[in-house]
Image (cartoon, rainbow, N blue to C red; front, side):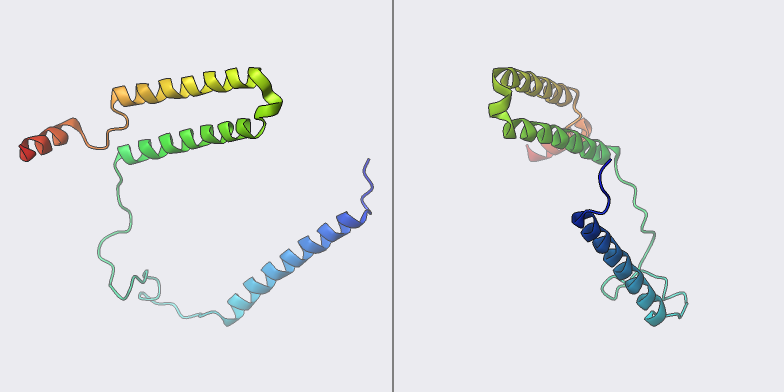
Length: 135
């Protein structure tokens, strides 16, 4: 069992107490000095002096969320490759082969998504209309 009275533990405890005290101070001062007035115009969002029109809840296309999910997935996979690149000397040939298989699977997934049209932002009908307009 580690000794809890070591100097670095006390330093961390002082740091945590300082953080908690600072948070409590900032919340307390803002509640004491903050505005207490309520009103319809006080609760409206302010955007450069322009009065809001309509709702702030916009509907996004499902394609937007699909592209966002694909970005996150491929970004996380890039993190795995970064971790492999940091330890490339220690992993040797086995690590190189595993990374190559990993990249091949990623490439196959990307080609599959491209082939089914998951990466196309505009629907095919709109693309055909724009192609006819350009001619």
